[in-house]
Image (cartoon, rainbow, N blue to C red; front, side):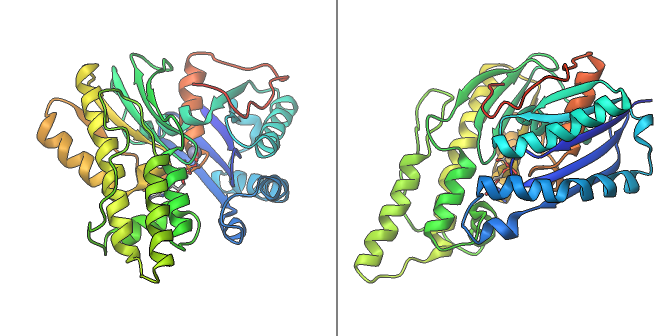
Length: 333
Ligand code: KG4
Ligand code: ZN
């Protein structure tokens, strides 16, 4: 039996979780700051760190109460140490180090994206070799994994992350932050009527979303100058379909090229209903021998359950950190 306590505070969610063995979550508490950041149209780093400081002891208390555990009984403390906002990371890391020192527990430093990838394991064991499509607010990567904790980034974005593009397009369309959620909702009501460029439609496994984002911004600005209305739901549907098409096409091609047994989605944009629908359909039709794993909606966006899941894999491999580990705002996989 193992019991892991996990902390995530890399962006605007203060989160803690307790994981028993591989899958049993005794607690999974997420305190979101989204309402505050919505006032500014995006995450304000200084406000995020202050809110983490304000919230973290409440989240700690609530997590311990919900899990009904004593911290002296946990086997290790897992924490996101990067990448993310430096001030936000510091708050969670400092609490993790303090608990590790006070209770004499090993500390596990988890890469945020590794957490997103291993969120899938809360549902189904990952089958290797596998390919992860990582799509979040800060990352867009295709990651080949031949074995646990082995990450080969075979493609990535040259500019904006896909979640960032969703959020910027959302903002120019006058939608609330985070734009990805609003665009996904509106895309269901809209039709694909706007002609948008296919972003980096080439033979590589890399991505580029800034040209597509600029195309939407230009269409909106030109329409405003001509006093014409943009049909927001149609623009949402048109933008989302182009993004989904390039993500799914490159993922399927990479899966065949690397001969993987499983494809997994990871990160906040993995919650996108268009992406989930199209990839499910195409894997089913085109790659019948490859298993597709979609993380449940509750563990797509930032949480500590995913950090616990990754922490468990690292615990089994004895991947521990010294107590002087520092926050790493930009660290590669
Ligand atoms: O993984 P995450 O919570 O934080 C980062 O690690 O960045 O991802 C947040 C991103 C935001 O850009 C948000 O707009 C996007 O995930 N997102 C979505 C959806 N839900 C969240 N994008 C598209 N469709 C969604 N349903
Ligand atoms: Zn994330």
